[in-house]
Image (cartoon, rainbow, N blue to C red):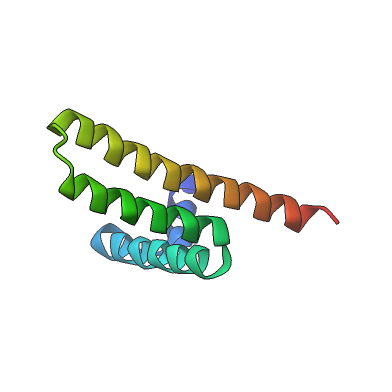
Length: 93
C-alpha cells in the first residue's frame, strides 16, 4: 500500500532504536510529572512508604502482590488524570 510506505517514512525510527527513543520519552515524561505535579510527587512518596512497610511486615506473597499492583495502578491513574487536566487546560480558558 502507498499509505503504509508514507506512514513508515513519517514515523521515523524502527526496531530497537524506536524502543530506545520511546523509553527516553517516557523517562522525560516521568521527570516532568514529578517536577510539575504535586499530586504525582505525593503518590510516589506514599508508594515508597508502602514498599518500605511491605519489606518489614510479614505479609504473604499474594497480599504483597495486591499492594504492589494497587500502588502502580494509583500511579497510572494519577498520570492519566494529569494528562486529562493538561488537555482540558490547553483547550479551555
